[in-house]
Image (tube, rainbow, N blue to C red):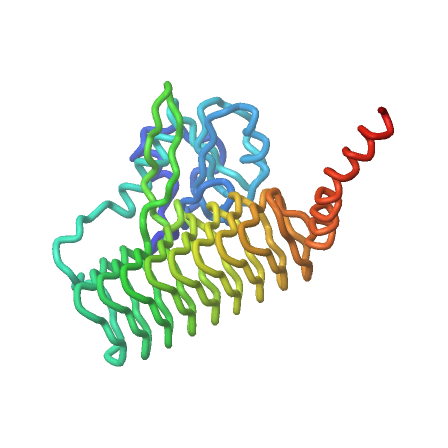
Length: 313
């Protein structure tokens, strides 16, 4: 999430009662979890074994719970509960606002857009030219929808991220302050759900088409001109290239990278990164040619076992 204007880190430190280590004259431009950080961002770390990753990340400001030497170009914020401080900032700069009317006054909708009955449109939503949103769809806060987009009925765009921090046996909810960005010429089938990012953006690239009942997790980035068949599910923060085809009921785990021009056959389970231009099948998914050879070999297994028993007799 980016702030509307840069904020002095001294002001932020005071708001969370943190002690500054390093240069306190800098200004922060946003907040982000570690996998999405950019220069100017604030992030946090509260487990010592991850300190090095956070201190070596692109983030300029790190909230942490133990005093360490400040690397060059960074500013550290010492706080006993880094997650609580981070979540507090998320709620302060993007506070929750309940949906009290079918269409927020803060939404910007192009006059050529078609909005059917019973569509709910949240605050700070932008909808482009000639876009068609069908009945009973919910468009949550901070969603940006481009031109010539079709969203079929009963979709939910911009639901909360399924993202929790485990503390003392409980799951503590993060405030989801990311966005959903749907680029031009995208089509989304009936009953799809697309979660917003925890603090970054969920992006559906130009020309991509989703069949009915697909789920796109928080912070997923999908490239241009992809085709996803029905009941595809993508785990959070996975990155998918251009011209990727996922057939029906493909499941993709979180934080993976699927390169461009990949095809994954129906009912496959993807648990690792996939290389460009290849076809995959199976659970776990492997290259399709290898998977088909394994299936052919398994079909011969009963006869091989029979022959083995006869030879033993």
